[in-house]
Length: 202
Image (cartoon, rainbow, N blue to C red):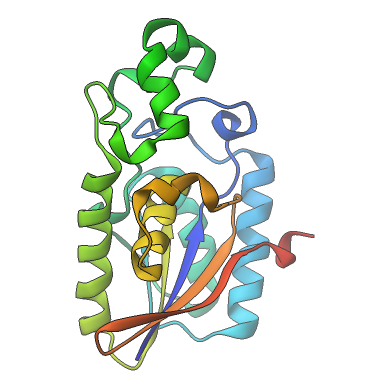
C-alpha cells in the first residue's frame, strides 16, 4: 500500500480574485505563505512522508518546500502535477474569456469534459499525465507515504480518477487552497481516506 497526501498550493492573488492561472508562475501571497506553514505543521504532526513532489510552478514548489522543511527533505519537481495549460485564456478573468469564447466558457462550466481550452489542454490530457504520475510513484514508494503538491484542476482530475468517476464530475469536487486530500493505492485499486480537509487553516 502507498499513501498519497495530495495538497493544493496556498493562496495567490490570482485565485483570491479569479483569473485563469494555468502555467503563469504566480507566486504565493502573504496568506498563501501562512497557509503553507500551517499545512506543514499539520502534516509533520500526523504523517511521516519519505518524499515530497510538486508541480514545478513556484506557488506549488514554495508550498511543498514548507511541507518538506520539518523532514529536511528536498522537493522533487514533477511535470505530471503542473497546472492545466489554459492556452489563450491564461491571465484572463472569466468575464474576459466569456466576451471572446462564450460557447467554450459555457461548456467549461457545464460540460467540462467536452472542452479543449483554445491553445491549451483538455481534462482528458490532465487525467492521463496525472494518473501516470500516481501509478509510477505508487510502484516506487510501495509501503510508504509521500506528499504531492498540485493545483485545483490537476488535483480534482486525479481525485476523480482514483474514485473511478468521469471528468464530467469536475465541478462536483472542491479544492480549497492548501486543502489536504489523502488516498491509498493497494494493488490495483484506490481508497479515499479524506477530501478537501482544511481544518489546519482554521
